Amino acid sequence: SGAEAFEYHYSKHHKAYVDSLNKAVAGTPDESASLEEIILKAEGPLFNNSAQVWNHTFFWNGLSPNGGGAPTGAVADKIGSDFGSYEEFRKQISEAGATQFGSGWAWLVDNGGKLEVVKTANADLPMKHDLKALWTIDVWEHAYYIDYRNARPKFIEVVLDNLVNWDFVNQNLAG
Image 1 (cartoon, rainbow, N blue to C red):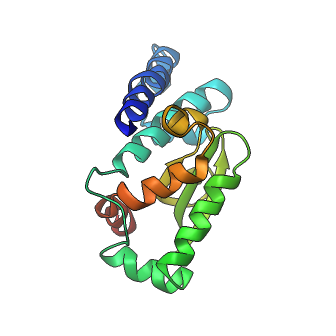
Image 2 (spheres, rainbow, N blue to C red):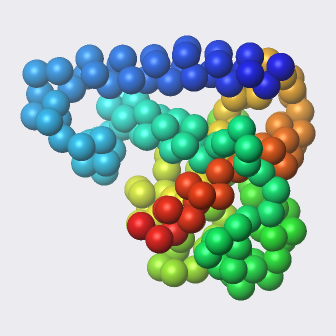
């Protein structure tokens, strides 16, 4: 079931990143830094752990059990004007997620006032590229393997149809 994959993903993978990050910053000046501050200056394992804590938290916040379907609110208008239609946005984010080689993320971002779809590998994330993240889908294999095995496109479709939290996306657009 979807619940099994999400529970496994959250309790195992996310917690491991949080624990590793806490251990890495203990007793260092980064202990009191914000997660974003650490991400923007970190490299190597510290970057990977801090960025993955941020990415996963952002991914979870972007999901809702009552979500999915066409966007609502201001982001609906913005998607319409910047992509031409919700269907075109869907096509682009689905393609970005399905074609991300190996592990990574597909993102809806605000690039200086224009919405775009980008993909990043591994722990990389929009803030490292001066882009503002509005929503993401995790296309690391552990996100969908329990339920969908190698059917990444099906996983993306299920998330778009049933789980996108458009309220969260609108908050990010406005914020």
